[in-house]
Length: 256
Length: 384
Image 1 (tube, rainbow over the protein chains, first blue to last red):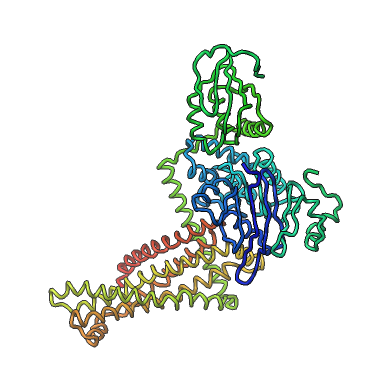
Image 2 (cartoon, rainbow over the protein chains, first blue to last red):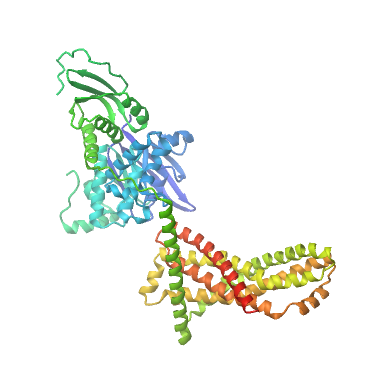
């Protein structure tokens, strides 16, 4: 099994005359928690959608597990889809199903596991996502924002994916809920050996749990490395981004 | 835990061998040696293999030959052990990563209490709940109607509060732009009525009576009902969708925090617009259905337009037309109140909005037909 699970190579994205990505390249190794940051309009979410095969890039290659998401035959791409999970920004839970039914959808669609095992697995997924057991019977509309995101994670990890993509996992959450969310994501990496790739604006997430940071700016990768490495980069946007914390003095960084 | 140097004694009974485990009974202890990949992708085969396994007494689990395990595999393993009453087996040989996964799932299972199965919904309970909901719904509509009338009274006292701009916009949307569809439908209804009546009347040589039938039927009953149904589908649904989406985006809350009343700003203009527009649309419907009947009367029944109009003057008392037009504002009030209320009270998610819009249309149409029946009885009693 190869150690590199995501390869992004010279990706170019244009919307009309506007170039969003102008040769973006990076790779992600198995078992790491990587964050993609960048100012508004730098195409973070677009890149994420291109990586998971929802939006076609104008040029370049995006490979997951060595499969080119935009050149491989449909059957091969489908097989890859079962090896990653995606959490959309607002959860994108199916509103006509209960939370437990939402989590069971991939299990019922893609496996022939016995119903009582499915129920046990759903309970396990809810637990892994940090939801109480009674949340399973609720409808998505009855959940708070933080719980909806956790339910979305539970659905995303239902099939035990190797990579988990998260789009703005902590946006709209209060700091305490957000930190709990960070810890849960970290435990998915540490305890289950998942690879997590997330797009975020949340500085606390970056400083708390992320191992590697990729900064997107002007259509290119501006910086790529550990948090201290990226903070040392001499660039006005990066300086501004981290300046809030510099003023505070102490910067706790994960793994240091 | 497992003593590798100890020579195993003969198995007491034969145990199955699968790609995932080998089990052997040594003395009073069962040794379960895990192997291969305990992964979700193989879970089905794994589970059926587990069904063949018999465990009893003390059990030791050896994970040294295990290649992969994920949390689904760990769940199956732990459930297997518990099913056989093995609560605390002796673990050995697990790598750190595998042990963490098993440990996490074990902690989860420890916390699980058998969730009570949801009660099956019994028919009588369901019936009761539905009836209570309908009662609540009607009560809410009545309440909303009262609030609308109160707002109207307030506006009559202070006419400057009326949102003229919103009223004209709504008049255009609910009235003017509904004219084409109302015209087309009522024209065709007129044609069909004249045709069907004509088939019967021809047999008796009573062609001219077709005019009486169409004139009274269309103006008193069909035009008001059909136009009201069209408007319920067009404007009632759009009231719910508009107000409901404003509620979803918190626009109605914004209106409230700016010190304005949603009833005044949003609801009253819509109710008034519909009450003004519907009688006018019914009048359009009257004219179009008579035109439709007139158009087919000449070729089918040899009644020229001049004879048709002359007969119309003689045989269509004004009261039938007025009854038809008089019902329209009542229908409009009901449609607008239902549409607006369903929009203003919609749940804050997109699915609820869709359901509320559908419900508005169904409720409005049922209400219009029930009201029409009530009118028929009432007017009969009043000899109108």
